[in-house]
Image (cartoon, rainbow, N blue to C red; front, side):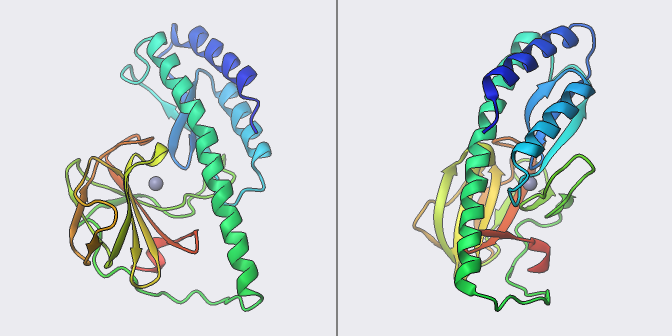
Length: 248
Ligand SMILES: [Zn+2]
């Protein structure tokens, strides 16, 4: 695991040192969600490379840096330090989730044996687009020069309150708050796939309920570790995240 205690102290000291003189900060991101802030690019690069080394064997951990300008996010040192502490703690939660997913994916691969398909035929499992319109702001598997691996879903930007519809019929298995995903819904679909809808502002269904494709299930928001109002949509099979754009 990350050597958090010493790392964190260092990070917080740097923030205090730099934020008093400049309004530029760097956010360390995992799967596009900012986990902690630092004051200099050098420090950001160092943390990213440390994290990449630490987690280089993981399948879907997406580490990057975002440059942040302006006063809103980093108005006071105290506020920034509080946010930073909170977000750093979330890194461990996220990594634990990813490790579990990687383990499940590995087990699935074993049970499937060597009958791996090499063709990537597009298979439509999304009967209804989860939101109408919705500009794509981050694609599945998206990488940048500072990332070690990929985004686990598709980000569709839309105003807070926009209706989210069930993309396929099935049973709601989770409706509630879940760490960096914020308010989210998981649906075990009749077609054998699992679909996740994250960062919601409101949830209209609860676990155990059956939904049909097109049913209103939630509203777009920015809960959890999100930097703007959008739907994070995932399609999964046997615990493994798939590229939603190959299924819609
Ligand atoms: Zn996302």
